[in-house]
Image (cartoon, rainbow, N blue to C red):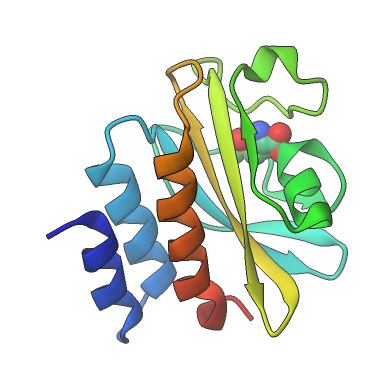
Length: 144
Ligand code: SME
């Protein structure tokens, strides 16, 4: 079964949907080093379920700050090929080289986002964007 099919089954119902989806993405896609979901609370993004080798200190990020805040403010996926060259980047892990942030929308507004760090430079391309934007649609109902 593909990761997307597994995630479609998880989103069909049951407990801990967000954590289970984070776990599948982290465990099944080799270049996803750290996977987390932030949820919108007022003007902030608050860290929800995550999976990776280390916790991040960025558990609350104002919308508009960092790569995460930029994606939420624009409602568009952000792909950063080299985090060290992006002035918006809020550093979490010394090993991170590239990042993708995909907003999760529900009823026409951004309610959360999927944030993935990779230890590989320029790890994220169209396939990741397509997979994660489909996953974001499935997760919308679980993020409000
Ligand atoms: N790098 C993010 C912050 C979150 S950590 O990657 C988990 C950013 O620039 O917004």
